[in-house]
Length: 298
Ligand SMILES: [Zn+2]
Image (cartoon, rainbow, N blue to C red; front, side):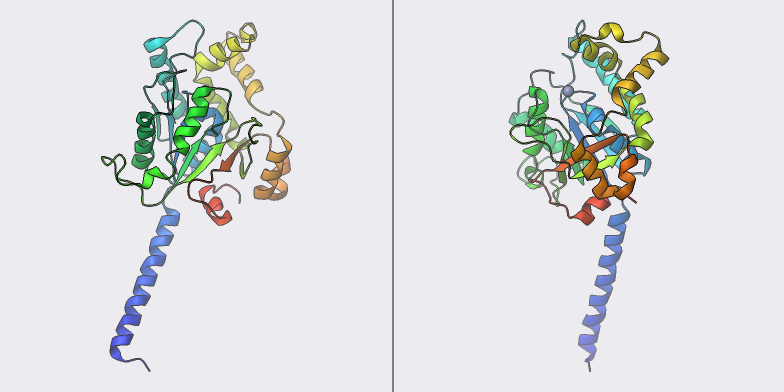
């Protein structure tokens, strides 16, 4: 038999438990906050654009950040004029994806270094976004800007919680889950697809968003590859050419296996996918956490 005082405490405990459960349910329903970093204004789009469009369509908050302004990425343009052109292209791409924000930081393209100053820019962006999920390239890549973007973001995976760093921007109380975007580099270790997302339902949106990066997809990248002459001039024809380049490519066996893990037998029909690897420096998600963060598998 409980005395009155014990009963009161038991009652208070029950109320707290109910409030806690309600808060947890509210948190589970709250929009996810995702921030994606790329070295250049188009890298986030290529790495995670389809998944971002899926999140955005479900009301989740996605922000893309280009760590450089892209002012070196062209064969006949450059400097401030090119940076302005690419910032406008990024804004339009963000609009076509339906994401909340696309920010282009004013660091020079081709000259990015993993300095303390840029790390602080990244820490502030992750904190201001109150991110649940942070996506970035791995620090293994042919392009030093991509590589150092990977290093810079990886280097924040604990520092975002340390109050004495960047004290002008309140620290996160909960470390985000940090994810690497897919790549094909083999050394020192290949990419491991912990999560694979079918993007068939938004592949056209991704192609249309990439189409906004005119200076890149129709000018600079074809020039680098020596195929500039094969790009059609007429907008509808060049969009069809882009679609051919950027969708329906064969899916590697390891990515297909990851799709099967998350989608079961439906994975075999998937034509386009994006995949992510969990970084071991941020919060370590359980399988249930990943299903909550990627609410696409049912
Ligand atoms: Zn790039």
